[in-house]
Image 1 (tube, one colour):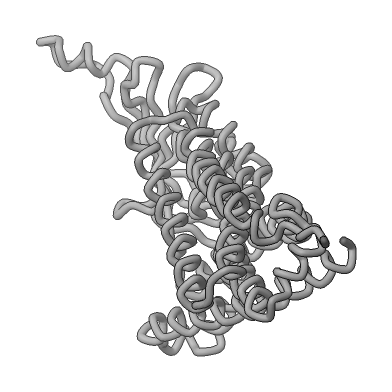
Image 2 (cartoon, rainbow, N blue to C red):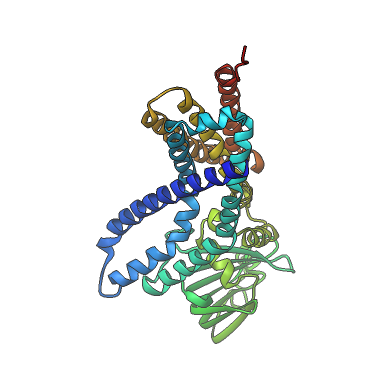
Length: 385
């Protein structure tokens, strides 16, 4: 079994590597074509190639399951055409035993997927966003037309709403507006600053204008007597320091999509959102999907197993490979559809994350068992008279 296992692993790894290189090259080419119209004096071709190079680990992370599926189908279909799978079956390796071998082959790829998911892809994605901030002055994701919005609840039950027009690298921000609300959500003050920096759990504002509203402003407005005190006071400060739970990592987490964050960063961001009474549904679902991501590799290679068994009995390897590709693409479309339906219908996060994988695994195992029963009489050893 060890010889057969090494031989299968070599064929599957080689085919999957070729497929992944082809897919990554194709996607990179289209991305480069799409970004060519953004070239300018400040955004050169070298900058474009640098940003594309930083996106390669994320592309590998996203394409690894479909690359494993297509590569496994190509490898197993080739073995079937050369009748090598027939030899394995006649030598006593059953369908479920072959599936177990395929699962063992997938374990190193699962470790690679976890390494990409938790270390390489998040770091390069953060570096790519910082590079976009420096080169283009902006980064994608999480931004409204009015900028980025954050909400924090203070220890005295006051609420701070922070609006940032522009994010820069190393925790620097521009165009900051801070609204301070009391425990009844009445506006207490508004602070505007041209620039600021987040460092050591503090937000340092420069050239800020603080507009303070009198605590009894509503009573003064309701009273027929003119107030003796001003309702609004405006002060300017060269430098203002505000304690905050925001930091440069959480600013970048606001930019990144939750699926591209590491599990540790996701947990930290979920804790920050929950402590400020903000919605965490998207982030919790992304955390579950991140835990389920290595499991999707097992699903992909399980889908490839019954297709390979079909090759042992019938010709037409190209049609079976095309069928496997369609099934794999359909699986990922179902995965995205389940995510959107789960978010809209407020399903449990684990249901949204695991339902496509479990459904595909059950269907693939069912197809494998059916084909195994049909093939059993073909590979049953004949007794000599």
